[in-house]
Length: 338
Image 1: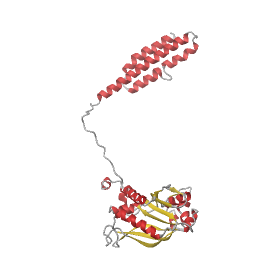
Image 2: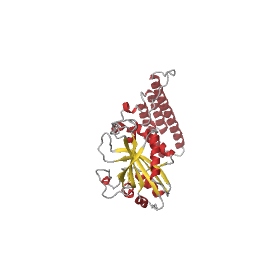
Image 3: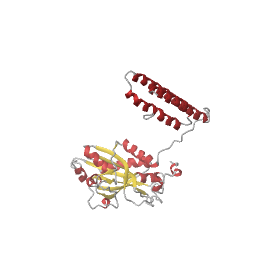
Image 4: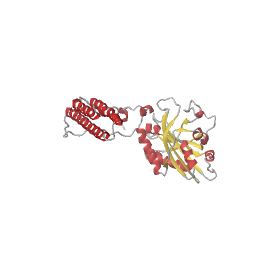
């Protein structure tokens, strides 16, 4: 039997078999059998090398025709199966109303973070961000943290095998900005931080901070107080007052703790403020000259203030949330209240 006769026999067999395919898998199997790389047509074409120069064009044309007719039959079978599947589906009622997608909303942490950033942006601060995996130099050394400071201990900080850490504050962002930019600097640094705290009603191993830094000539503690007073009034209400208490932070000198008057009792004293009338919100102070020297700023020319506060802390006060863990449990009954 000649090659042309064999090709015609393959075509006849394929045209008789393909229309009876019952599913898409069978159609695919028949395609592989007849016109695949190792299918019947391809195997027959390997015999072209033994033909004369006059015979090859005729056999080649026949092979192309056979392959084209088989491809057409396969496509028709696939279309038939697709049409039968579509017919089995229930008819589409175009008069039915569309299904509304329920829209979500921002998480309370995002709400507070966005509001805090917006307030500080209106005061002229620019948002700056940095990596959550930090070097020890950026997170501790450049911020004048002593080598024996408790915060450096593995029981307080998450260390990686290569010596890097999960940042314990967003202050490293301030260092990174000052390394690249000469004063004046006026930035706000929002972000997630990590500490080895035991989770309870007021503590977590990861939480959010927002920090501010202002460096220029003749910046004073009065400028810091004015900034935080304006921030408190916008975030917690126009009647909110602030007070400074002496404190210590390695990266500021002098350092202060900033309290806001309790929005629950108006400063009269209640359970939320432990009957003091005040809520501890922020740590702040004038940037330590040693920090300026670490980033090659001349402390004889430049002064500045820095402050930082926890977003979860503000959210808990603002929305009267009794337990910080509610913010991370993803309970829709809780989240739908916001």
